[in-house]
Image (tube, rainbow, N blue to C red; front, side, top):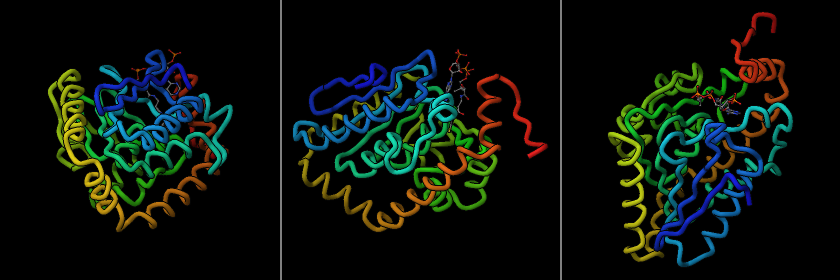
Length: 256
Ligand code: COA
């Protein structure tokens, strides 16, 4: 287990908290592994009725640890990040997210696989994959154009434009934007708790039906995105973008 992933039980709700505040909850391989294991165990534990994912009051997550991307890039289907993606994709029970502060990269794309999402109004969400020399991941290249239309999805995925909690709710990425982080976490917890009062198999059967129509296509898209993403991590474009982030300078793609 990673020291940066905290879990807590409140009745039927398992709270999974990303807790690496000094790095804005940037996700390391150990954190992905711990989250994947937590989800897999929670799926098998009948007393868990829902999972709440949060990063606490200040930051959801700044996405994959950029230093990890540079030093030990994930290698496809055996990587910890893929294990996490798979575990969330296959999770049979409801997952609720409480998003405060920044949600970058996988911090935004993982929301597309949660059942309910609550976000603070001033949260900042963005998917700067292209900006980092990468490509969309975790099904976002399929889900977002369908949800938002090609034009809006292009702003978010090709330009990497940021958006706030109110926009996330207006566009259907989140259920509701709340006025501050305390209200966001309280609302998400309240909604997660509601599942404890419902008949559990009716909930999981219904979730499965809701997700079934696109499921196999989405699985293939996630695999194809993952393959390209892994290749792009080794590209000169990605090396320059990520090195520039670590060196706190603007990237220079003019000679690439
Ligand atoms: N990977 C590794 N380190 C990260 C990180 C990441 N994804 N996000 C933040 N950090 C580190 C910073 O390098 C900094 O470390 P330092 O104090 O040792 O210098 C620390 O976390 C604080 O980050 P900082 O950028 O100073 O905070 P901020 O409040 O100004 O900005 C963010 C917060 C999240 C907007 C900004 O850090 C950011 O854009 N992060 C990168 C996001 C990203 O590109 N993720 C990958 C997506 S695929």
